[in-house]
Image (cartoon, rainbow, N blue to C red; front, side, top):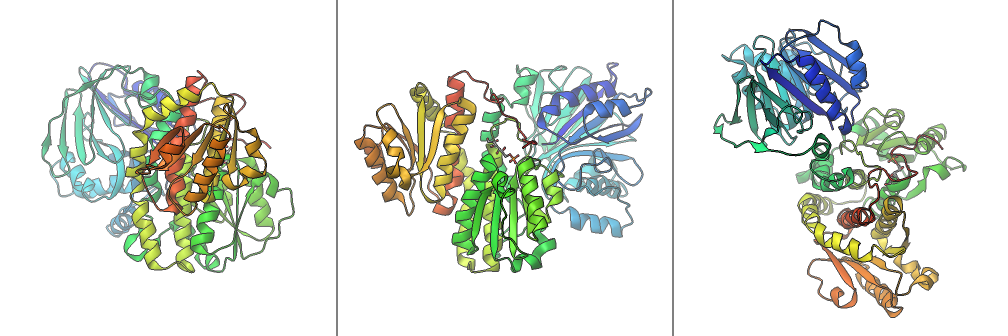
Length: 608
Ligand code: F6R
């Protein structure tokens, strides 16, 4: 996720140095380009790292205030021209922004018609021009900025600066965090406290819909409707590292906790609820080809492959398209029979997994339409596929993939709606799915509140050496994911099985030392899962059941129960995976392992 840092002071500090050091402590968020603006010195931007930016900065780049940014691309490739800060036509108004301006296209058209000249493909640039436009009529920078902010829709954390008022910086928040740092003769704005903490521990967190103005001597906060806000400062004792993790002990936990936000971000602007449609701008260029698709092949590795397996259930049942899911590493070495009526969907968080990339290339050679569900904007898979959808999950830092899977599953629901409505899916069904989809963030929040119960269970079972996960239908892949997470961060022997397969071999392993986590939430296979649990209990196997809130029967059968809110069967994997992620996390933590950096694993596997 992009990082913002802004500084204004009168205590003799060099703003350029303060801002560059601050950017270094935001690097953990992941980014693809960096930039800085000082009203007294100008701007420098570059694709790549903060170290590159530092190299490009001239010796006389000096000033008392400025704004800086690390960009994680959303609109436009990660190039110098798209890096922030962005400016208006005259280079007077400068802006750094995290988030997405949803109505940027219409605003840009209006501004172009008014004669504004754009230099980038970024949605952010409209903000600088909007402020410039309002400065023609408003008396002050503050008023012009407020008028501009009232015109934009979407999510933002913003810092704005005006060359003619160099010591004043304006910040605003709508869905993307902003924190103010209150020093003595100096003030700060940042997207999280980490760059502020070396200077002051006194901070104020903005709420959505709030605007703040900082000068060296003070700050003020007001709402978008100009009413004043009084907020006490908070004293935070976090170290820089703790702050980067949002106060959580590990990135993995922070990323699991981001689940509700990730769903919102993946769905944002992509649902037309009253028509029961998904609007996927990234697929528009291939809209005609998609109508003629007769078969889908999903290729991916690891957790992304598991997302694909869940997608298979959704797409076949609701869109009526035949789907095959294959490890990209296998696909690329056989001779797949493909044609122009085949869509090959590559799912990848990093967009750089070599096997997945090679499977895309193989698909292209054989004439398939290639599509991507990718998190990292501008990554190789995103560039090489014919079209695709970005996850907008923000960078995932922990090696074990958690929030990316949540967003991949949400994206696959969007694909299902998209393909389904082109084919057999009726508007009623689509509307029901959309209505339920919108409830998922709140339901995930409820699950996250059972963190302590899940941590206690992980402690109870931490001395076991083996673990089995079982599920059926689209929760069978979730059983695979539960096992994969436990293997990769706890180094445990864990297996994921389709519950129906138990009797054909795996049940032989069951005894009182071999626990099973059984996914038995309500749905068409609930009774079958209950029978499987009976079979395990008859062999003295301990069982943790994942069940739907209100299921009183399961507690009589299983040794332990984790409850999740009810949802429709199609969407249940999105909820059910969350407790399994937490379980694996607490299991590894209990064993004192390096959760975020498990042995032998890399975040992005760019070798065979
Ligand atoms: C599991 C995990 C890996 C990745 C796999 C694919 O937690 O992180 O299994 O899911 O390496 O990576 P991407 O999605 O980047 O292609």
